[in-house]
Image (cartoon, rainbow, N blue to C red; front, side, top):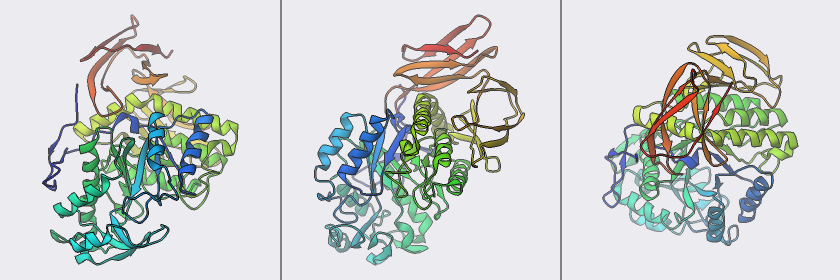
Length: 491
């Protein structure tokens, strides 16, 4: 059995000896799924309604983000009981259904708040008294009001912050959506380590959050920005567990910009970058751009769906019709079936560097998912896709079974329920289908693949070597721990 390996992290506090790896963190298997949220009414009733509607349409949900505002003030970590009167019971209810709760936050403690019942946070005066803010405790205005940015370079300030997080990091809560607030405190900031650029300071903020979660829960995650058009680099590849690139529109323009940000993040070495289907703000997704958003999203690390631009309308697949709901369900299902394959590719990134998304082409808006799956985004209303397949090997159209030589130029119009998706001949794809392990084989002589197979919803895994011989139809597997599996051969 393999577990997360660590090397010493210099910024670890005395009370919490957190350690970090040289490359990207391991990603819990559950987080490579479908995460939903809403930023419209932001209430307990809204969260439950959202999940219930997905469930009633047969669309699986792995996690739900409770976005702002949920606390009495920013960021005091006291539940707003008007919005969430039974927060703990809500979290327990979601946990019983296999849905992990993720809480939004920033690193700011406010004295003036935009949309919460209290202006000054209950912990604000203490933070000031203990001199735990950057810029000599000077408050600044940011997009949720005015407050202090906690100085995460200060070990005592980090320890204090962790005691604040402990109030809400209860059973059923699996992490935090770590949003930006620090960018509003100046291009250069004063810290316990002296003056530094805002970009250098961000590492301490995102790092402290990532290490807090991983030290307390092996299935825990943070969701943070990698590269974003809203401020460049935020968390570094070593600190980002799951990435989302920022705020986009739900139209074609928003989709293209998000693809650009995701690909730039992958090229910079970020491992598990996901797509926020239908964007967050601005233009709402129409029927066709919503579908193409979902198809691209299911070929990234994580499908995230939620925003303020139509949280209970255009963000919901069934809003666009039963056929769109079916297409979206198929996208989520395919994405979740590929979870063992995605997990293994991200273990490779953890051990050796790199990203789940490989050979990214900003020009053609195409990428490899791991080594054996190729896809191309459709970013226009006519369904036309023009792209060149990878040079090496032969490629099988996932939907039709048609075989193409490597390097073939493809020009094709795709109906709404199809998109460019190709599997390399010789691939042996580990999948999770209806709760069972399946190896999907695309025969090509005798081929061997090595995988890091997940052992749970968390980060534990074992090494497996799988060989298929087309001549006799035999599959051989060597694993550290035996398990039941089925074989499906694509002909």
